Length: 126
Image (cartoon, rainbow, N blue to C red; front, top):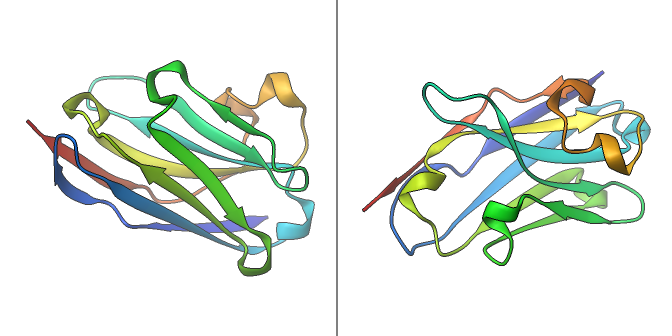
């Protein structure tokens, strides 16, 4: 099992930036990929970005391409989400998640992730 702790959320004006961090502990050596998902009130949890732990391949939802960047620090067992040009529709609780085994086509699906963080609120004002 992997334990995940997110940080870095907050309130920002439209057009601004935020960086989220996700610190992983536990069986991190068995991680295949790390992802960020978000959930707005009344909506389903949706895929945002992900990165494979060993190869560093990245995946982005169309809605965040060119604005959000995911990166990892293997030595620190930490994943980062840099969010630029934020929009009010980016407002949501953002969750970090870890997938122990999988393949590329499984990455956008939240049901394939084994561990989840507690979430951090991101609010973008207009």
